[in-house]
Length: 269
Length: 257
Image (cartoon, rainbow over all chains, first blue to last red; front, side, top):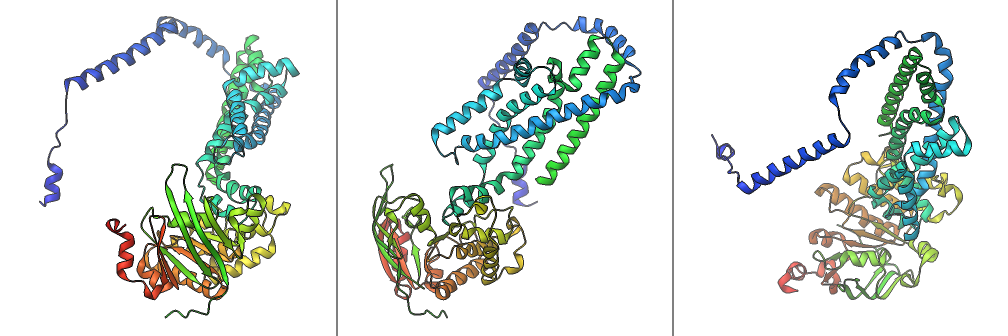
C-alpha cells in the first residue's frame, strides 16, 4: 500500500460542539413551526378531504365516458387557446427585447432609461396575468383578444427580466473587440450582442410559449376565451362528460406543446 | 533569422502619457515612445506595471489624464464620439483571448473587422458587404486558415482563434496593431506561430506593432525594440539585441523597483 492510499484511509476528525447541535435543533424546530402555522392559516382539514373522496368519485363516474361526439365543437376553442398563447408570446417577445436592452446594465444607453425599463418590467411581472385578463375583459369585452393582451403584458415582464439577465451575463469580449474596430453602437449590437444572446433568447421564448399555453386555460375562466371558457361553462352546466373531453384535449395540447418546445430548445441550444 | 526592413514613418507617437485612476493610483507617469511603420515593439514589465493600461489608453478604451497619443499624426486624446470612432479604424487590437463571436462563422468574424468602414443600413441590420467577405477570405488565407472560413468560430483551437482575431484586425485595415498578451493562453507551438505571424505582418504590411509580452526570450527574437515599464514609468527603450538580462530582471524584481 503506498503513502497516498494510507493517507486516504486516515479518518479526518470532525469538530462536534454542543452549540452547533443546539443551533441545528433550533433551526429544525423553526422550520416545523413555520409549516405548522401554514397548515393552521390555510385551514387544512384532512378529515374533510377523506370524506369528500366519495363526491369526487361520483363526479368522475358522471364524467365517463367523455363526450367524444362533441369533439368537432372543441376544435375552435382549442385553436383559440393555442392562438392566445402565440399572440401573447410573440407580442411579449417584441416588446420585451427593447425593454431588456434598456434594462441590461452593461448595454443600457443611460441610467434613467435603465431604471424606467426595470420599473416597467417589475410592474408587468408583479401583476398576475389573471388580473391583467380581468382588466382587459373590462376594456375590450369577452373573447380571446383580452386573453392575448393579458399574456402579452405579463410576458413582457417575465421575458424582459430574463432577456436582460442573459444580456448582462453575455461574454463582453466580442463586444469590446468590435467596438474597437470603429463599428457603430448599432453595428456592435447586431453583429456581436444579438448573435451572442440569440440562442438563449429563443430558448426562453419557446419556454414562455409553453407556459402561456397552460396559463391561457386559466384566463378562459375570467372570460378570456379558449378551452378555459368552455371548461367553466360545462362545469356550470354540470356537463361533466364534456368537462372530461375538454380536459383530455387540454392534456394533449399541453403535452404536445411541451414536447415541441423542448425539441426546438434543444435545436437552438 | 528575421529580416528587418528599413522602417517607415512614425505611425504611433505616445508623448508624456499619464493615467491616474479615480482611486488615485497612478498607472502611467510620463511615458513616451515612438513606433514606426514596419516596426515591432514589445513592452515588458511585471503585473500591474502599466503595460496593459498603456495599450488601453492608445486604443482609447481608457481616457488618459495627461499627454498625447498621435496615430498617423492625429491626436486621439482630443477626439470623442464619431470622430473617435472613425479614428479607431486606424488602431486594431488583439487580446489575450480571441474574443470572437462563437456562433458566427470564421469568415463573418473576420469581415466584422471592416464594419467601421461601412456605416449603411444593411450593416446596421447585421449584414456584411460581399466585397468585405471576399477581402476576409484573403486575410484568412494570409494567416493560413482559408480552409476554415465556413466553420463556426466556437469550434476553433486557441491558436486558430487567435489567428482569426489577427485576420479580423487586418480586415480593419489599421496602421497600428496593439497586442495585449496575445500568446498568454496558447501552448508554446501556437505561441511561436502567432508571434511569427505578427512579426511578418509588421514587415509585410508596414504596420506599427506594439505588443505586451511576459516572455523576454520571445521579445528578443521577434522584436525590433523592447520597452521596459516599471511602476508606470519607462525603465528602458532599446533595440532588442541590446537589452541585457539584468535590465529585464530589474523589471520583475520588486526589490529593484
